[in-house]
Length: 329
Picture 1 (cartoon, rainbow, N blue to C red):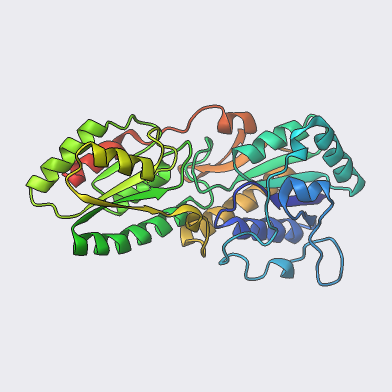
Picture 2 (cartoon, helix red, strand yellow):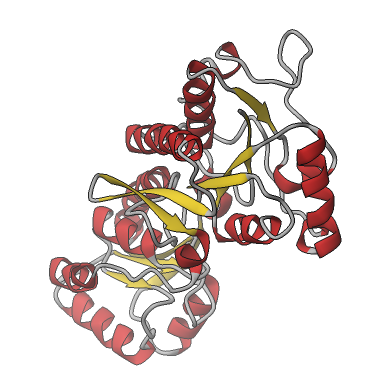
C-alpha cells in the first residue's frame, strides 16, 4: 500500500515525531510512504518530499532524528482552494494519479473537516492524528503539542513571576486558546497563578477586582493572571484596560506569549503520544479503517469518526477550576 502523510493547520510540537512513527511503521511493514509538503496546499501543487535518491518516497533514514525536533519538516499551511468542491476533486485526482491509497493527516479540527470533504470525492482510506496545541478535540485525552505548549507557557510564567515579585506588580499573561481554555487552565495550575480567564466561563470583572483587593489586604505583593486569547472579554490587553478603570489595586503589565507556544523541542510526553498515535494510525489504515482519528483515552487506543472529534466542545475537567481557586486562596 502507498500511504500519504502530511501536516496541516497550525504547527504543533511533536508533529515530526508523528511523521517519523508513520514512516517507520509503514515502511517496516513493507509499505510505501509519500510525504506531502505544506498540507492540502502542497497536495494540490503536488509538492512531495523527495528522498536522497531523488524519489518522492520517504525512507527509514528520511526521518532520522525527527522525534526531538519542533515545528514540522513537512511544513504546513492553510489552503483556501481546498475548501471548494473543485479543489477537493482536484486533490482526489492527484491522489489517484500518484497511486496513493491512504492518507494520514496530522492536524486539528480544520484538517479533519477537510478530510471529511475529501472523502466525498476519493475512495481511499483516511485516518488522522490529532496535532494541535489547543487539546480541543474529542476522542483523545491529549493532542500532540499540548504538553509542550503548557511547558513553554509555565516556564515563561515562572520567569515573569520573578519580575512581578521584584516590582510588586500584577501580570496578565495571555496564552493561546481561541475556543478552549485547556492551555490557560493547565498553565494557571502549574504556574501557581491566582486567577484564570477562559472562554468556557464568564469573566466577572467586579468579582475579580474584589478578590484582588482581598489579596492586597492579606499582604499579597504580586499576582499572575492567565488569560486565554479567546476569553469573551477580548484578551489580556483589553482585560488590563478594563481592570484599570475598575479599580485594580495592583500596577499591571501585559505579556502575550503568542506563537512562542507552538515552537521548541517537544516534551517526552508529546514524543511518546505522537509516536504511539502515528503507529496506531498506520495499523488502523492497514486494518481497513477510514474516516476516523486515532486517539488515546485512558491509555487505550481508540478510533473516533472525524465529525465526532469536533462536533461538540471538549469540556474541561470539572475539578480543575475549583482547584485553582482553592490553591490560590
